[in-house]
Length: 260
Image (cartoon, rainbow, N blue to C red; front, side, top):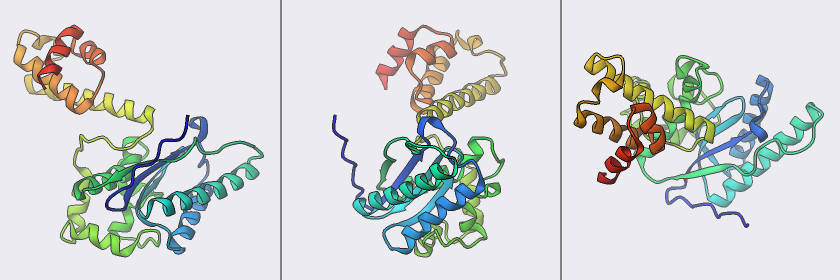
């Protein structure tokens, strides 16, 4: 089967993710993260890509890039190959370092652009590595707050900050807001995020009605329907899973879903 052609963004903005092969940690040491960012810096200096946001985790990376699709693909390919060669030599190994091609999604609205930036910066928070985005060293968050970062295009940064009226405080507050949208992510993390979102939804109803178990609401059809709708729309769990955690049969979930 041939490769699926990548979608081309009307704006030139792309959210990109690349992960370690076989879910391996590929950034075991700060020097690995530093080297990868250094190679990205080379691509930026060559003028092939412009970076608005990044986050380097232990086993994957997130990037927000502005570039022509072909130039971005070539720049990332060169970066990944150079990193892989160095990594394999250092650890005396052979084979792929990254799992296949990088994944990408197009960004065609300002709202989604800001959402991706927040999502990228909050990756270490959601992974419970740090309590605040600003405490993580290997992301571009501080480039918008109090630190210069040559990887981040200053003109792009200015455009982003203009959306917050130049206010660092508003930018910080934005990163603390809950976002129910789903962004490009590796499968296991996406599943975990959906389950965590479902837990928050159920916890909100338990707190609201001062109950310990959602089954105590089974007598109120309207409330149960509201819960199921929120789980479908925001948690995006399979109907089977929703039926299980709410304590109703799958047929009821199907019937509610058909009304949406």
